[in-house]
Length: 231
Image (tube, rainbow, N blue to C red; front, side, top):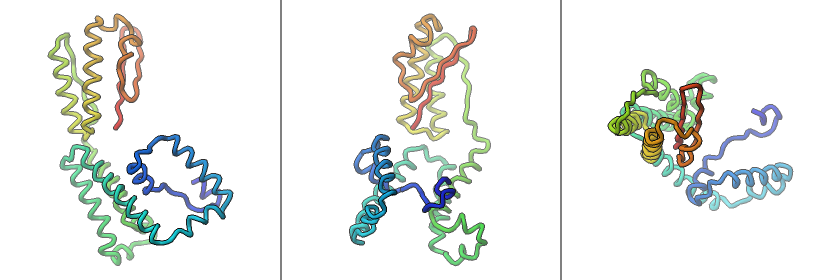
């Protein structure tokens, strides 16, 4: 948007860089900052940037095959890392079929109005838009929260694991993220029980808990702990 307002060339994300990151294992944000700084310098020296346009076609083709292979493999890995239920099957299958249909039946899509063509001009746009809309539709009626009442017993902690793993499968949470969530949550509950329900305060027993993000607050006799896990 900023580029459009300034009247410069259109800018976009580079999917091929995902393949390069996966191949090299270099995913640090500091590398991204350094590369961004270099690209800013190149923006003011167009002759140096033009050197990349002089690369031989065979070299560019080989680089595309290399990065594309990792992008495809990475995409399949992301899809299969989640619980593939009936909803996910429809989202992935229909989106892939619609995307491929753009190349199999190009004349059909060319008859679309200019407004529709903005969204059906490529396989990528059709596939992404289809997956986005289908996800919205299939999320209707799918609850994303659950409440479990606990008692002062070890059985309640065991029920917690069953609940979390069941919800994890229903919500397509990655297995490694689910394992961390179960382990950390059980640790918090057992510590609460051993500490006599907050006798030592929130800061004390949360020291050894390692979620991706943690929030804790207390108000009167009530305390709230949020353990946030990402995957």
